[in-house]
Amino acid sequence: MEKELIIVLDFGGQYNQLIARRVRECNVYCEVHPFSLGLDKIREMNPKGIIFTGGPNSVYNEESPHCPKEIFDMGIPILGICYGSQLMAYMLGGKVATAPVSEYGKTEVDVDCSTVLFEGVDAKTICWMSHTDYIEKMPEGFAVTAHTPVCPVAAMECPGRGLYATQFHPEVMHTQQGMQMLSNFVYKVCGCAGDWKMSSFVETTIKQLREKVGSGKVLCALSGGVDSSVAAVLLSKAVGRQLTCVFVDHGLLRKNEGNEVEAVFGPEGPYDLNFIRVNAQERFYSKLAGVTEPEAKRKIIGEEFIRVFEEEAKKIGAVDYLVQGTIYPDVIESGLGKSAVIKSHHNVGGLPDYVDFKEIIEPLRLLFKDEVRKAGLELGIPEYLVYRQPFPGPGLGIRIVGEVTADKVRIVQDADAIYREEIAKAGVNKDLGQYFAALTNMRSVGVMGDGRTYDYAVALRAVTTSDFMTAESAHIPWEVLDRVTNRIVNEVKGVNRVMYDCTGKPPATIEFE
Image 1 (tube, one colour):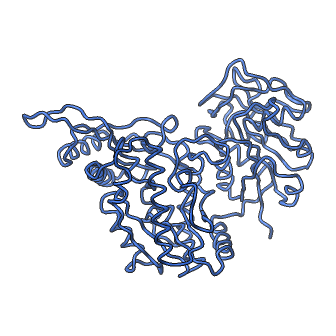
Image 2 (cartoon, one colour):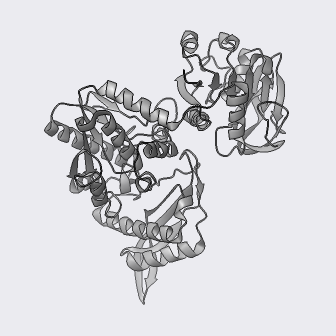
Image 3 (cartoon, helix red, strand yellow):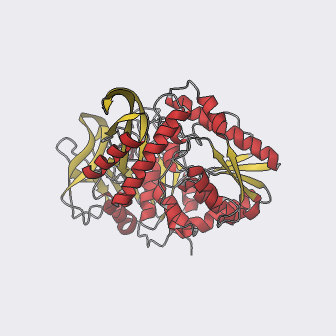
């Protein structure tokens, strides 16, 4: 049976893959394609529905992305989101203009619960707005289905043509009933049955990797984190001993983590892998000496990783492919495609201009963290590995504000180990998306015993999130923070102050740099 498909046409929004991920949560396969995807290609793909993403442009600017008007007459249901809603209105004869009042953030929206898109949704619901323009006049045949005090067309529809639009973003977590809205579109408007599972992704990806690699040799950049571990096992199942996993211990790992990674993936571990450990701590410390700017640190670490992999590949001989555990939030934050650069990830935007491999393979590039974990479970990876704390490729290099030194690494390793131990002991770790200790570049006066100290401040971070695109600061019980603080200032030499980061994402990122 041919699988059901929803396609997302990307008009430059940061949430394009998040929309796809939400549709996949409805057990319907979804792919993102550029807005310029031709009508013939769309017909060939035979989607059950189309979703237009948001974007940073104004539809009435000539250089803004558009699509052929004929797409609205193909008989395929379309949902326009934000820019996509304005584009639908504009192209079908409505009017889009600069809004008298812009809307950003959580907004109470009045919706018409009798309409198919808002079936099961509260009459007043919280949605995520992010717009400067608005639909001033709807096209002929459309009806308003939602509004706010300053946005008269927060949603509109023309059911006879299968056309629906929302000015807000149903795909983000801040839209409280957004999944209900997307589910209504997928099932009630598009008529999908919902028979796609993550196992389908695993099976298809293994088959595609086997075909791509053929008889070639593959080197996997293994960090021991969730993403690279899942990528390694995918490749192992696809090409077996043609794969060599290279684990670079750059001296920026969590306490004892190098040995833990080797215990899992090395010769004594459960996987039939070619495994090489490279201890390159001094090499990385030397390259980072005197460097304080976060992007510079990321790019130095990213380039040095690649150079180590290239050297190891030459020792193996004739390696064609480099495999990385890049996931979608890495891609978006690195500014690839049309989005703005937030921070370069060492395996994406942090790559050097020249890489001595035939091709870089990133089998998880379109997945979010929780989807990667589901894929890991499908692959039979133990839960304790699948659900281990996320750890960035640049490691503690971006959890140390300012210059990286061996002594600072020791401080943050020890503080982080205490924090993670107490969080686990208190049983609050299961509800957290990510938690860690970071070392600020601030030193302050303190008192220990009868003496004056002038030492560093450690910052503790904990967030709740499912997709890592947005996150809320976690409410850690005070008694846990109190215990962690006491232990750190007493047990970690060089620290006399501990702070807790209460900032969400946005405006902050989850990591410190």
